[in-house]
Each structure stands twice: as C-alpha cells, then as structure tokens.
Length: 252
Image (cartoon, rainbow, N blue to C red):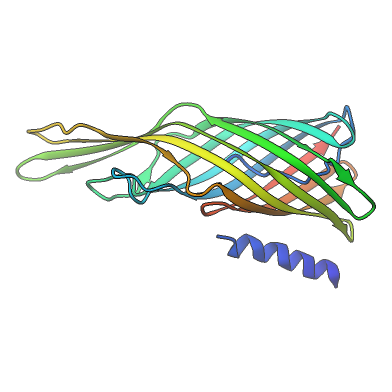
C-alpha cells in the first residue's frame, strides 16, 4: 500500500510541477568508490526568460537525449559526464511575424556534475550537488512571406547557450525506493538574434543575451533498484517553468 502511494505521488509530481541538462540524481549514489556506471537519459524542459525590450516573452522548449558515464570517487561521492543532443523550439523569438521558432538542428551538449554526502545516519542522507552544461553551435529558423509588393524574411538564431546549477538535497529510503529532494540555485544564459529583411530596407538586427527567470528552484525524485546493478531515476524540477526526466544506469 505504501509503495503504491509513493508511486502515485511521484507520478503526479511529473504532471503538476510547473530547466536543461538532465536529471541531478540522488544525494547518495548507488556506486562505491572506484565503480563505474554507464547510462542513458531523457529530459523534457520548458523555461521562461527575463523580459527585455527586444524579447519581452521568450519561452524555450527542449527535448534532451544523452549518454552518461559516472565514477565513484568514494562511497559517498560520485562525478559524471554526459554527452547528448537537444532539440530547441521557442515562443516569443520571432519579433515581427510572431511564428513559433523550430530550430533546424539538434544541438550537441556536454554536462559535468558531482553529487556527494556530508551527513548521513540510518534514516537520512544530506549533501550538495553541482552541475554545468554547455551547448555547442547555433540553431536557426527562418520564415519568408511573399506578397504582391515585397518579400519579407525574418531569421532567428540561438547561440552560446549554457547553464549552471547547484544546491542541497536530502534523501530517505522507503520500502527500497530512494526518495530525494531539495533546493536548486540556477543560472542559464543564451544569445538570441532576430534579423528582419525586406526588399527596400535591412533593419539592424535585434540581439540580446537572455537569462532564465528566477534563480531558486526545487527538485524531487525517486530511484529504483531494478536489478542488482541497474537503477532507474525519475525526477521533476521546478525552475522558471519545469523539467521532467529519467535516467537508467548500469554499474560495472
């Protein structure tokens, strides 16, 4: 009964919780010092960005697919590196035509992170985490409008996107499930440029470096031991909007 209630709570959080580089994972890793893990992950991210004169209502959507390698630094600390690709779409990026931005490329990214424990007893573990991500290359989308008097073209480019986040989590075990959650401090940035051209004029491009709304968010998740050396993490994050994801890892 308790297990069913816990599963229902975690699933509901994924759908009602109002973010970029994948899951953070639990405080206390499932690997010992010297162990190696390999895994696969997916995250759906939606984010809102601070208002600017050029882009007053920018909202970004991403689907991230990645592979991960982790290393146990000790029985209480682990580090990991990820590499993957991200789709990018957005509302509020096209200033003049108001269409939905759909990036032409799947942008590669890399993430480096570390999790650890500074306090634990038989009931609870508490520890910090840090994670940084950089997206390589730019993404563009264009819209062209042809009428009887002129041809208009608007092009939007996203580039130099990165994020960092750190925080503290606590973790408990209930009926074999590791439940974890805590607070996140985050900072995300992206360069955006909008170029608008017609037959008679070329307007100066609108450009800005945007930062994600807010700075403090929350994370909640659960880790299941599916097999002796295989774990599954399900996680939700509340930042400027939301992120939900999963991560499957095998220990070697």
